Length: 266
Image (tube, rainbow, N blue to C red; front, side, top):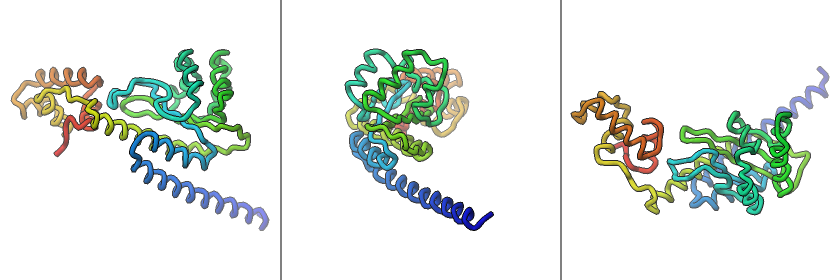
């Protein structure tokens, strides 16, 4: 290996190392500010401030499934600054059912660029037009970051007002930003719901007690022994809890009850 080649390889390695350190510092700064955000508008601005370092000045948060734990139904544009006229047009045409970006996100939870979806030869003419219409509305070089949690599927879209064919996209760091953004939004929305009284506790005193024991990892039999009731009665109460909280199992019920402060672990 010549000295020149070695020098350039070393220089490239140092540049990558320096870039990684800078990006890590930026992310730490973002987390610190996002954790202090008072509302979703402030959170949006914080995210955009940092994604601007990567060329993105537009953001949109979408919930592909209902998020019962924060009392939000499935929908596009839960928050963000995408063009309102385009969002209205998108909803009026019910595009969410055929949008190729959302379709891919339901199958693959890894971040991707929108342009990758139009490479699929099986896309319909309408599906291709959705991506093109979005670009024409001023949302260019789009990226989508699917976010899968136990309580449902969501995603964050990022785009640019102006096209940039030379834009280099770091999907890993954008994934980190968007996942934290989603978690921060959920936290803020949960806090707002609690303060406004939206989350009324629908559980009876006995259901709360059962859920507290469940949160501590007790089995149905152990809970029954603690409360002097049969295993079958415990199961019946749990089914009532699942129905009231609109969840499929005890893990989800415990998570929602804790986040809404219906129960606490003391």
